[in-house]
Length: 153
Image 1 (cartoon, rainbow, N blue to C red):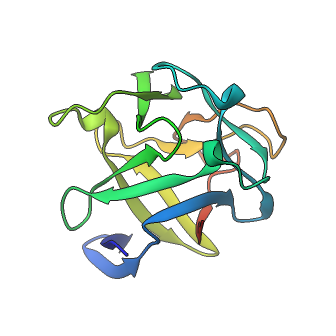
Image 2: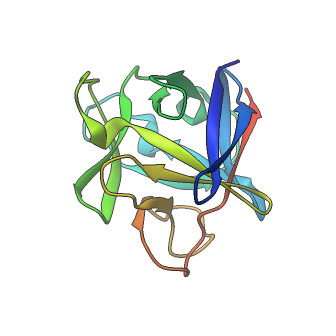
């Protein structure tokens, strides 16, 4: 299990163990999870919120790149989650690049789980509503659904 440091407040951190391979589910709707749309193995494929069925396209490998930064890699395609375009996304899967901060994430510990923030844009992965089929994207405000949990696959 990778050990990561999750940001709590200001300069405070807490150590967190996350599963090597996990389902990343919406904290207040644990039946909704990260899903590569259409089980695609193609670079650029959208990552959406979908009903948890435990398929390989819903499994994510957590790869630490430092104490507090990590990559989220599709177990199905081997491609990395990235925040494309600008700070609002969309979230897609692409080939790994060592120097690409769009593929690096950090955790913000919050009540009920974690916000998953992009290392470059500081945007949190979110969906507008807790509805299957909604795209994951970057989000800055307090609206939307953006608290996630990691469950071993």
